[in-house]
Image (cartoon, rainbow, N blue to C red; front, side):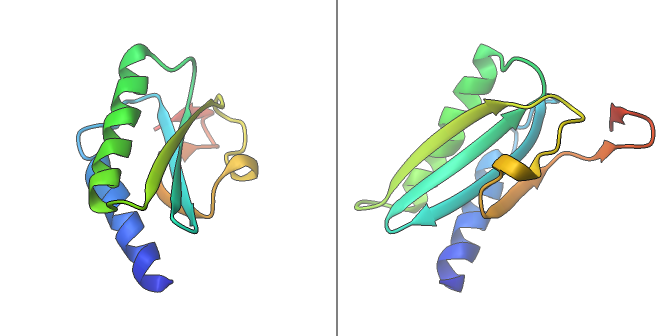
Length: 106
């Protein structure tokens, strides 16, 4: 279990390099059986490029987990300062720094 968890987190974090826009608040992930789900949470309406980047990240993760593994992405909008935790998947791969004191993302 820990081997899969570590491999998944490292795979997602590597795939996110160069794919994080200022609108991306968080990326969480999980696996069940041989199915992997990636959840991308955006602040504001995701742009076409955000959808494209999420697909590329999912494809790069899929390359690290060959068949019979499958990778699905879930893209959600959750505007700051709404709490990210209720819809989060089990593993956190990325979380944007947000300052509650100023009310602005940092």
